[in-house]
Image (cartoon, rainbow, N blue to C red; front, top):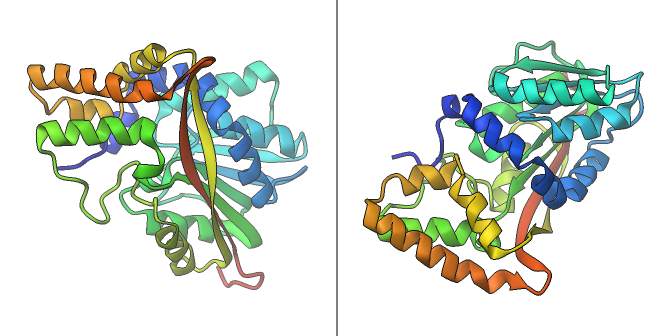
Length: 284
């Protein structure tokens, strides 16, 4: 049985509302890493950028500010509800260089060699066929252009998610995801991500691990947000009976309290940033 939400569930308004509500916390955690992704993708004034699985548009807006009025950013996602949030945010900020479009990463109805850079933040590992998605990104980026992505590193490097998922699987006797199955940590091995890039035809491939910090006002606040999760954790939790669900939440709270600090909750984490360049004289 799948260990992640099917794509159609990410398109629901409930998912968009939940994702939108977490923007501030997500930007605090991922904002600096996103800037690095944009640097690695050589996103600059005048660039044409494709943001794959843009969600509610945090990375889209960051790219749009960089490219300026002479540039262009296309925010693509399977969720119209999430893209509506992204479009409204761009409009509110006066960014007229942003377009949103409902698209599947694995079959982009876009012209070849039409973007200077392609970016994707915390999404590639959730695609049913990440190799095909990277191949499509390779097709649409211009020769010499770059594709940069951020994915989660290994589960054990991300206890904020790893601890709850481990507890739920143990109580429900739920098997771990099968090799190749999409889920949060499917590309947590840097060698696997690097291999995907190379098989898609990229040159000068590099994958680097970078630390992140998840901060909340308190452990209780972190748990409250987690209880409202509409992603993988809720899907797995739904497989437990009521008694085991209560046991799971009790154990999750007990273990996550180890990250309570004088100034609030702070859990370490790690992401991988992958980047590759399209051959300058590539035929596609």
